[in-house]
Length: 377
Image (cartoon, rainbow, N blue to C red; front, side, top):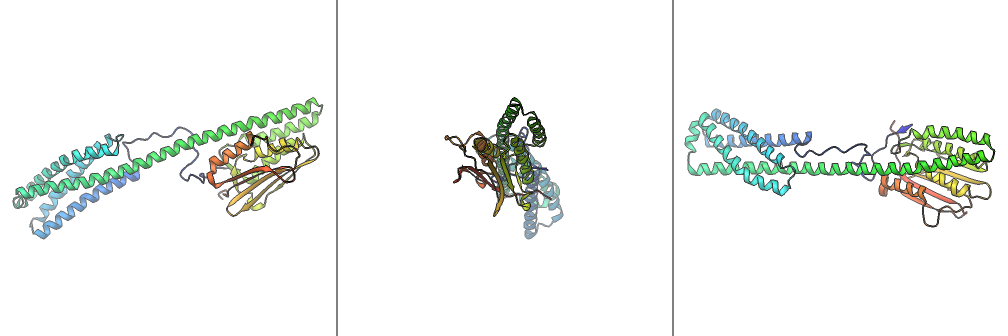
C-alpha cells in the first residue's frame, strides 16, 4: 500500500531525489531553448528578406528574381555567421553576462562588415543592375550600418535568451542540491528513530524473559516480527495511506500491550480518510512517547487515543494519553517529538501545524495538521 510522495507543498519544483545532481553544461541549451533560439534566428532572417524585398519592390529595382536569390544566399551565409557568434558565446558560457556583452560588442561589427561584403558579392552575382544603382559611398555606409544594427539586435536577443536559460538551469540545480540535502536530513532523522524503537522493544522482551514470562515474551517476538516486516520495507521518504499508518501503529501497540496489559487503545479514523497520504511512520515516535511517558509511568490503567479528522483542506491527527507520568522533560521536546517536528517542517514548511503539551486531565496530547492529499486511483 505504499504510495510515492507528492511534491512538497512548500517547494513546488522540489522533488525528493536520490543520487548525484546532474552536471550543468553551460555550453548546451535544453531542447525548448534551442528550438526557441533557432526559431528566433530564422524569423530574423525571414523578416530581413521580406523587408528588403518589399523595399526593392517599392523602388522598382526590376530584377526581383535575382534580388530574391541574392538575399536568400546572403541569409544562408548570415545563418553561418550567427552560428559562429553562437560558438563564441558558448565558449564564454562561464563568464559573466557583462563580459559576454563586451565581447559581442567587439565582434558584431566584424560580423556585420563580413555580411555586408557577402551581400554585395551576392548582389553582384545575381542582380548586377541593382549593384550599379546602389554603388555609392553613402549607400555602402548605410548597408554596413544596417547589418551592424541587424546583428546587434539578434545578438542581444540571443544573449538574453541564453542568459535566461542559464539562470533557470542554475535555479534548477540549486533545487536539486537542496533536495538532496533535504533527503539526507530526513533519512538521518528516520535512522535516529528506528534504533530508539528497537532498543525499547528488545529491552522489553528481555525484561519479560527475566521475569519468567516466556509465553508473553514469545508473543511479543511474533508481534515484533510482524511489525518489522511491515516497516522495514518502507521508504522513509515515501508517503503511505493513513489506513496503513494506523495499522502499523496498532501493531506496535499490540507489542507494547504484552508489557502493559492494562493499556487501552482506541483508534478513530473515518472511512473517507483512509486513503489520505501521510509521511511514513510519522506517528511512530508520538505513539512511542505516549507509551514511554504516559502508560509506563501511570500508576493504574491508562489509555491511548488516536484520532484522525479533516479541517478544510488539512488532515488532523491527534495522539493523546491519560497517563499520570510527565509528558516530556522540562527542557522541551524529546528526541522523538523533535524528529517529528523537523520532518514536518522540512517536508511541508509553513503548510503544517505541530502542537504538543499536557492536557487538563494530566495526560499529554500531540496534534499534527498537514495538507490533505490522497492516493491516485
